[in-house]
Image 1 (cartoon, chains in turn yellow, cyan):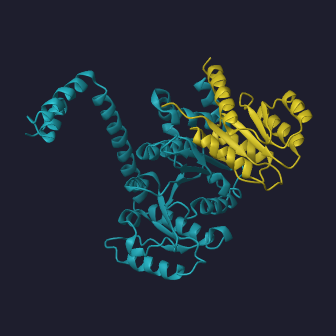
Image 2 (tube, each protein chain N blue to C red; image 1 turned 60 degrees about the vertical axis):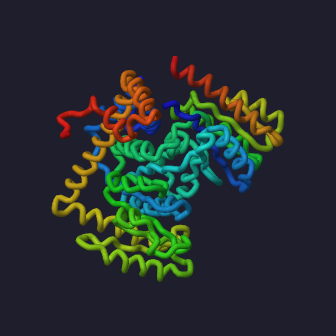
Image 3 (cartoon, chains in turn red, blue; image 1 turned 90 degrees about the vertical axis):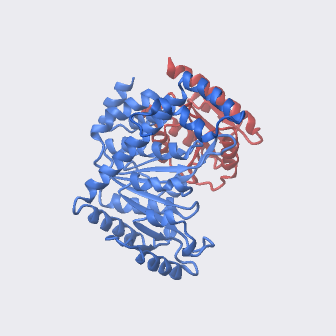
Length: 138
Length: 316
């Protein structure tokens, strides 16, 4: 049985706005993806635990609080430490262009800003997964 | 690669356990090899089944009771099932949202999607519970979506089965599906702060008392999961049932029953695969169906004929 792609959708930090995360979760589900949704107010450690326990293929964080420069690199570091270095991390939310470049240098695979078409997110994840399956199989 | 996972698994590494679970989920020979390797280590955990209708508050209760076990320094595993979309195969697995309090690395939560198969789902939940059992978890919760007759299986999957109900299900107790009534060893009336809750619980109690030949009378516990009410009572009720099982060889009896069920289930599945996967059988099916279509045979005669190769000492 071919297993569907599994994506963690997490809301770290203090902001309580999860509408974006829910829209993304629904779009992914409709594209045949299994979404593990964590709910609000996750610490980086909780996100790491969830990613480890669920063995997800992609970790995605939705951040609207402005704390992306802290939260994304922190989660990336924790993931690398615990052997999830082959699992891509993506972010979504209001993140300035200048920060996007810095974050990508820090190992964040992609950032999706406001107004992103959910279809673009789906096809991005599908491509990531194909790439990763090949790598794991090899 | 898998051997490396086993070494890390027995060293207690979460990621190794998690990746082995993914191999098991994917099934096939590799999945079976993992289960074979781990089987000698399986059987130490106490398994608690939690079933009931969607929205009854199962995850919240599992979260709250987990914390009682964590307070007693027991490690906990949770297998939480959610339905897949029958249209796209996708799923949103949201049980973790309700399991925030208990979330620490002493609680290993694994979500699984039904992926279109109810029987497959139960089998997979048990297999993942086996991995957590071998990983050394003391208590394992199996949270299943409370639909369909196949939930009956849960009695073979868990030592203690909790059925979670709510007073506002729009039904009175009389209309509860009989399967659900028989499967419960502990009943929970959650959202007990709602109107009618007390009456609902009392009705449930009097119905349970009518059951004949039961030396275990299932307790009915009233809880308000979101406000932590009744959680201590629920924990105690589970532990009382555990105590009951530990007497008079009941635990061993349950073990035999559940292993028999598993062997039967696996063999049954294998049998179908082997049988319908066979070319000769499939060709024979085509020709027999043709004779049914032509009115020469009834479907029952046809079915008997196609099963003939399996007739081991069968009586005529």
